[in-house]
Length: 484
Image (cartoon, rainbow, N blue to C red; front, side, top):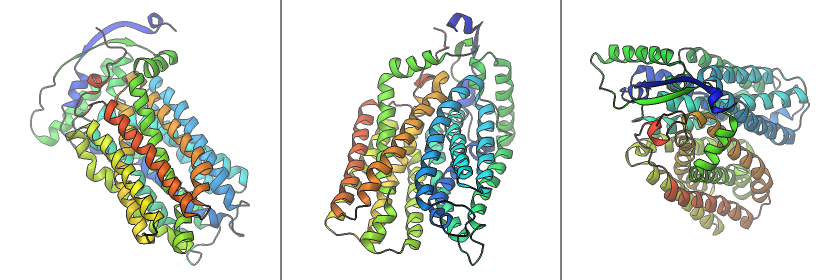
């Protein structure tokens, strides 16, 4: 379809984006955060639970004829494959058919797949619904991040994005603690406990789905696709709610946008825009996502094996160490998020990447010298991941705000799929192999590879990061439909 065929033939002048960005923080914005952002908690819960229940699923009496290697190998790979393909599939549909329709569908896919995982009676069934669970989660990343950025005011966008993406680690903490209880055969039968962990994920998804019903379509998306009256109606409703809560008038919006409306944007035009017209920004997104993927793999693949082999930590106790690491991950975006909106994107993105990389180099040096114990190594990991988590979360923020609105969901999907594939493939092949040999030098090399790529990404950010703090999305990246 040509641009002429796709055009609606109308040009509209609107202040809708400016009206959304001038809104003060309100209960309505909390509804957006809860309805859309809490799904990352489910993702963290999913990933952690599967890793923790692998040994129980392989035991006789679990009700599932599967080995521990199949759970952490085949099932994990299928979850990654589902997430990558789901991100690309749903991401394209999100840009074409709207944020709201897709974030309801993708959560529904996740809910159904997780519930059916709990009902697994054979290996093939478990594998199938692990893939479909990832397929739904991958779509959530594209639909949710694009919707959040288009609904949250520019003044708060950075910190909100970081906090939401960092909430993955709250789910990881919950998954670790839940597994300890669910796998206790003194409380629950061996063939019931692991099923309840998946069932709880489905119940939480249902609660989020009920809250999500109150989240509207993105007015920005509606404007571009010829539905400006609906966009005006939604923004007016939000304004009435905020005025009623504040009890006073709102600030005046600043600026208008002229849009030449189009029903759809072709995939070829999206690809050309991201990879050619914005190629420096594409290099930035690639560097940020690959850097954080390798650093996290360097630590998380085999962290339990490192503790047990080098420090004689009992296998059953490694979950407690993981809870501490996950807590450090969450605190990074929570405490540093505001600085991304005040100090600025370029300084904060580059510094969090460089600091986490340098701290991991230091951890590798201390580990090589034999200067660390289980507790001090965990403390070092916490320090590394405090900064790395803020940096990794800012990668999602970056690709969701530096490309034109018409390409936003697909851009998020592309870079998410890229990093997830890199992590899912490189992790087992490289890092698990290095940390699993039991040799100090191999583990040091794993740390150094992750640290080096993280530092390289930090240098790319120092050169290419876009100063998007407190700026309207339309100012950061001009919409393809904007009239001259």
